Length: 560
Image (tube, rainbow, N blue to C red; front, top):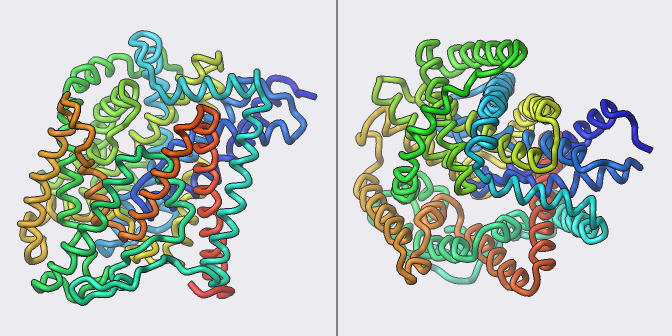
């Protein structure tokens, strides 16, 4: 039996927060292992519907949308708090950020991101009618759940069983030691064993699941980049004396420079294509605050004050520069929102690192320019995620105010949970290790060093490698944007660049997941839907298992 409307909304938000906890941990591991994060709208819808129906309720489509909205706001919390890149980058730079600072930072930027999305909702969704394709797809899934529950209930069951299987594999690997971290071939490359270079295939359901969510071309490019990087470029760099030894740990600090060059080069062309959105974003500013009541203004002022206090006290970014970074967030956050609305991709990392470079040019220190970039990337992550959910809500007729309450609850709870989860995981696995390579953090670290210290901050040989990689990334991106038929065969510079920042064994697992998913999904639409559900399940399963292993290691009950 259903409770009244208010009770149903509260139950939906609570269910969404429960689901969001899984998605949050999944994104935390996904970003620290592979430099990726997933909005999780469809997975959140399936899990929320299953949880609400298991509680013997008869949820409406709007209730499921509310739960999904809260869950995806929590899923974006690691990005809003800077845990996808900026905070671990600061750790690699030698700065310690307290957990309370991470939580307060994430809460402030999460609230500002949600508020900005709601303030421009009318303009972007109603007036300009931007599609936000993932939002529309989410609305279709939720509608199907409430009209054809059998098939979608099966997807939820597959997701659950996949999560349990991945959890079992992770516990067997990380707690019991029954499985290896990776399988390595008995080969050597320029005298360096494959195991030392982390070349092989990772025993990782999470990486297989992440691969299943990307196009096969990305998986193939990642595998190609991994092989070239760690069997050719890495041993060559070690032989030239650019790194201490021919192993992953010694080579990783040098390899991040050509990897970052590829990533930046591959991002410049798509980022330049968003320049047309800058004028539209400036026009969107007129919509900010129009018709807003007192509550959003009070929330915005409180969140701004919190951001300024944390930025000044923890990151060393003064009040004037923090306010300037928040102004950049409003403008560039709207650019990211329009990009997400038109292409379903929000260029969060490039916009954040563009801000880093800009603040570095004004004399902001090493840690301060990372904080400035985090303001833009973190806030924009929550803005884009909120608008995807709002698009689904517009299709389903969910009241925006109710969605706003769910999203604020998810953003605040997510910030509170993300900080201790991150601390636990990093303590157990070691930031920057082969188990937790933190590729996005290394990219932020590289940009911070250049923005603050110039090219003199680069290790020997890295400047030439980074310049060549930057040019290659731009060239590949331009070739891929060509209308010619052969353009689809151009390898992604982003996938190639990421392969230089993570173990080749991870790239191989990503490719296996992508190719397997492509083969299975090509059979029927139903098979494609099941593949997506299983992928979401194994990501959640290994993430929860990793958190369990980290907790046991912290308690001294298992080896780290």
